[in-house]
Length: 156
Image 1 (cartoon, rainbow, N blue to C red):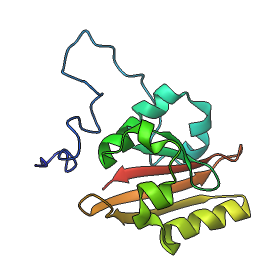
Image 2 (cartoon, rainbow, N blue to C red; image 1 turned 120 degrees about the horizontal axis):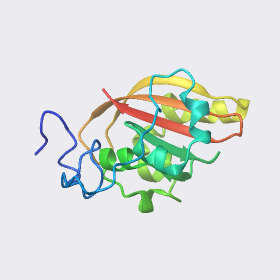
Image 3 (spheres, rainbow, N blue to C red; image 1 turned 45 degrees about the vertical axis):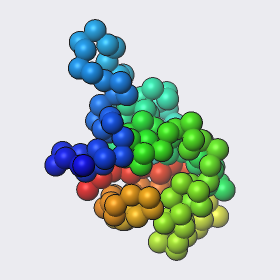
């Protein structure tokens, strides 16, 4: 059953705001500090300049996909939010395998248009419905200068 702080707690034992296996033990290493913030204007370009540990420690979902929509990176927060293990997500198509509810003109259409035009910087509200109760989120789609595609997801 979901609690009021984490409506997705029914998906995974750990919530998006705690490290996997976090038992509150003070001897465990802290995740790396990150300055990444979902609402920062330049966050899309910052993503390619930080390491995977920082991406993994971000307080919002980060998914890197190629031009066909195949997942290259799937952070811990997004894993906890969706209930999908990063090892299962990497190599899968985000729009057809992981979140087929996003395979529509509003989400996938914007992504395809941005890839075709060589630039993508979209921000919108969306409701995920696939294999989870309807979940309202803010989404950012971004294509950085190195042509990496990013999907950022933050619960509302």
